[in-house]
Length: 478
Image (cartoon, rainbow, N blue to C red; front, side, top):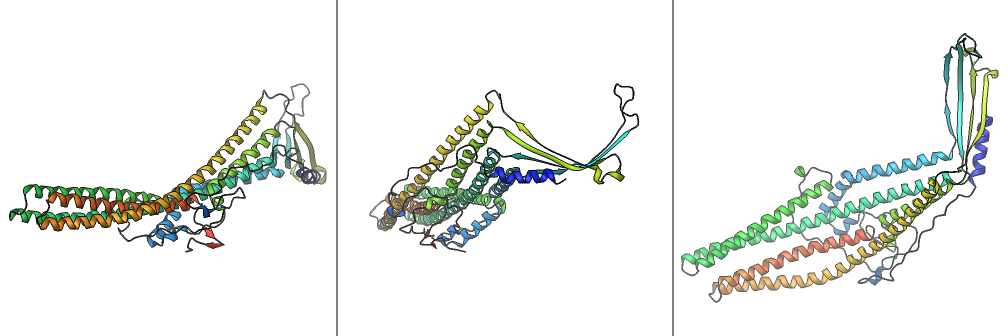
């Protein structure tokens, strides 16, 4: 009874060392820039093993905002897209396990019982009395992986599973970046709302003052009408900004996996400082990008599938065996004389397939070429995103300094215009123009602050989530 199984197991080690058909995977060469503009100390990305599995830490703690820290934790724990991606990772891991099972013989117990009556009136009749057949066989089958089809299938499945895990990290990184971006946009809306509400209060006081001056003959009806227009305009702008803030809050609710109707973030105009980019960052930062790792592992899977397609041109040999007991009576079923066994190979040799195998091989090679192009394109996009974020970071810092000066000068002009109007040197139109300029400058400053924070988030995302320098994590740990 042990003979067929011993033959199967002894054959396994003999065929496992045979070479596999198809090309062995090698990462394609990619062009890299010598340095980044705007920050040459950032280094360059080199083609080495992906480092996306390295811990990134909770990079959002770089911004030092407790509300953001809490929101990120809620999103990571309850976001439904992230949960769906995690389920896809489990599916890919299970598929890899399914492919791995082909390495081993498939063994099953197939007991059976039958009672048959044959017709005595046919030629070569069997006995007229019913016949009983009882069997308890143990059946095994195994494909001899002569040309590496099973090994290439496993190689492809493992690479697909690794790509799925990398895509999970990519979704996780995108989620945390989107939460931070929407959060900073919401805080920017809070700052604009505070500016607009202050403007509404100022416009209301000016309308009251202009109305009093008109009653005393020191102002005209035109001045009062302009004051009313400015008040209504400021109120409308404030309401529009409130609508935008509400939409951002609802978007954050979805990201956090909570109903929008019960989700609430208290308004605050407290400033948030963007983290500084340390000089001398290591040259392998982009290797931590999970989307690049996913593209590279998808490429490896496509390469392995070329070997699977090529193996279809070669013979396939399967070894099957069975051993057990068979008898017509239960009393004799497990006696030594009732033992049965069989073992033998089966050969599948493709002779004419109508071009199917050739077409499948061509398709596999084309799929690999597609994956190469997508991998290189992903790297180019990564360089673009880092470069865009670096350039925007530098230029926005310069713009913020200029905008801060514009706010100071515009507010001084508005104060001077108000003083001169009260003294009777200028018309109320000069006051309106100066205040409009001051309000626009203040709102632009708030928008610019939110944009700088979002640019910092974009840079962190482009670098794969945080950074480390000389082994010390820059992203603060919880």
